[in-house]
Image 1 (spheres, one colour):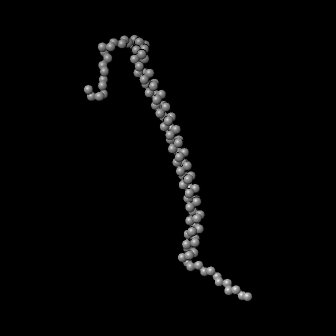
Image 2 (image 1 turned 45 degrees about the vertical axis):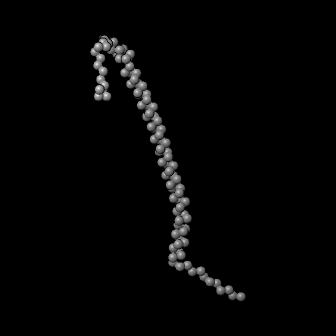
Image 3 (image 1 turned 30 degrees about the vertical axis):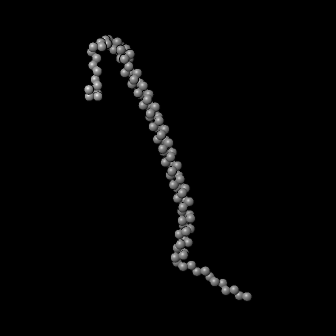
Amino acid sequence: MSKNKKKLKLLKGEKFMYCLLVVLLLAIPMFNVYTSSLLSETNNEVEKLKSNIEDQELTNQSLSMQIDELASLENIEKIAEEYGLSYINDNIKIVSSKGE
């Protein structure tokens, strides 16, 4: 019993298609991992920026409170007394920026 063994021959186009399929099967998961790592890195940067913004907002609020304290009438009168100045209500001019 002799069997005729036929050798399977692939055409050039078929070889190219199989090689392309193998490359795609390897490249797609690698690309997925790469994009996931980029997304994770970007999310970390966003969280750092949010934290920096929150810190800056707290600093701004603190500075605003300090400005309000320093600009209070009691503080102004206290400093005026330290330098020997007097508070005369008639000498105070009100400046408005609304264009009145």
